[in-house]
Structures are given as structure tokens and as C-alpha cells.
Length: 373
Image (cartoon, rainbow, N blue to C red):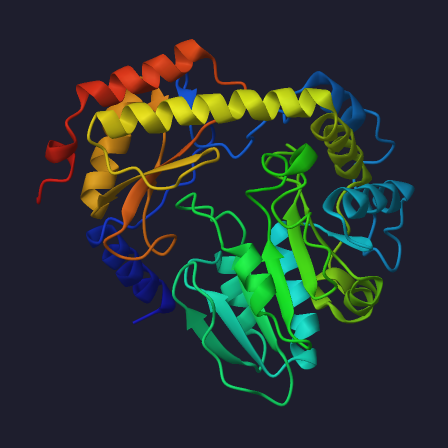
């Protein structure tokens, strides 16, 4: 049997479990997109696009420490550090690589790791790359841990990307020991929560906190960053392999993200967040009235938990037939039995578009969608 035969066997297993994916070229023509993480609608903002088009090169030319130096990076890093209330920030070409870089660089400084059960795959993969003893903590709870010769790495998201729930950050900070590190993934909070959209951790001025952020969601660009004490950023610069050996993001992307950040931090950003909150609350409230299992209490993420792969796929297809794009979310993105649609509400969704979504879901009976095949 050749390796391709084994590949075909693996694909057949995925198909049988209804977990085989197909990468689409675009959102279906004419459909309203409720899948994008572009929460404030800045990815297509003309001012952000103008900053992108003003670039003088298509690529950075190399890793940041070799040929990939550009003033756009240091300018954006300074703005991100100020925004998030940290001493310094360091850019990575993706939020995924930022998480892996932060975790692997900090691992030698602690004796073990405790991560929330619902953290993103980038955190799970980063922890797997370390030699730390790893413990999975029940969702939104504090780790129960014995005394240790050195501190621990505590890892959580502030706003969880698949169910919209929030971490008890104040309790986490109060529970920290002197030599602990609290690594907070703010990917789904930055831009949409906190003062001037600075996230839930911005008000926690504790040097034991290190923040992971992204430029690809509310900022409408691409890339990620780590923000924290200056010494931590210096350590990452010298030891984080996902920074040292990765080609730097295009300077044009950094310029676009910086322009978006300027919008997010001013009065216009406050207005966009208010509009986003109103849209999301309307969706959440009306869905509950219709009998859907809606998780999450606030923010732009509105999950509809259906359970099985077939139920989630049925609802996604039924919505697409009615002009709404909201793909099914299946394992390994969520645990088995927790398949769902993850509705991402945006500030630039119109009331009419929200109405189309609600009318489509009004026509679909939740009991029928979750029925056993």
C-alpha cells in the first residue's frame, strides 16, 4: 500500500465523519457574510486600503533580524504597546506564530503550564512544543495546583473565540503567585472590548501579564504580536524561533494595521463598537426568543450549538440557500458533540442584513435541525 492509498483511507474516514473540509475561493455570490472576524469592518475601509497601497515593496525581503527591517514595524509596535498598556510589543507574521513564540520562549522560566480547556489550537500547539508538564483546566476556572519550586505559566483567552465566553481575568490575577506568568490571548477582545478597544487585560497593570494579540480581526489586517515587559520582549527577540526564522510581514500590512489602529482608538472606534454591540445583542436576543441554544453573553461572537456534524451542516446549508453564509464548525475546532454555527456579527452589518439572518432562522425549526439522523 502506497502512502497515497493511506491518504485516501484517511480522507474516507474524514468524509464518513462529516469532517472533511473544502477551502472555498470566496463567500457565495450574493450571500451575507456572518463568518468573518472583521468585527469593525476595517478590512475594506478606504483609509486602511490607502495605507496598504502606499507601500514601496511587496515583501519584507527576509527575517526581521536580517534583511526584513522596516520603520513601519517599530512604529506599530510602539502604538500597540501603548494601546494595550504594556511596556513593549513585538510583531509576528501571524497570531498563531506569536502564541507559539511567546509560549516556547517563556517555558524555561516556569516549572509547568496550566491552560483553559477551550484555548485556541495555537496555544495547544505551542505548549506541546515545550518540555513543560501540562495541565488542562476546566473552562473559565482557576488552576488547582500544588506548590512548586518555580512559578507556572497560566494560559487563557480573554474572550473565547468559539463560544463568546469570557475568562475570569480579575480572579486569575488575584490567584497569581509571585513567580507566575499569566499569558492572555486577546485576539477576540482587542478592538471590540475595553477602553478604546484595548481589550480586557489593558487595565491590569501587572508585570506578570503577557498579552498575545492579532492584527487580523478587528484591525482588519494580518499578523500578530506579543506585548509585555521590556525584558520579555527582548527574550522573545533572541529566542522565539517563530520570530527569528520567519520572514517578517510585509511593511504594507504593518502600515495598514497602524492606520486601522488609529481609527479603533479614537471616537470613531467607540461609535463602531457601540454599533457592533447593538447588532450582536439584537441577534442574541431574537435567537433566544426563537428557541435556539445561544451561548456567550456579550461581544460579536454568537454561537448556535447544534451538537452533531450533520445538524450543523444542515443549518449551514439551509442558511446559504436563504442568502446567509455561516459555515458549520466541526471537530477538531470544537469538541465532538459540540458542532455549531459561529455567527460573527460586524459593525458594518446593516439592520436589513440582520433582518435577513433572523428571518432565515425564523423559518428553520431548531428541533428539526438537531434531530438524530
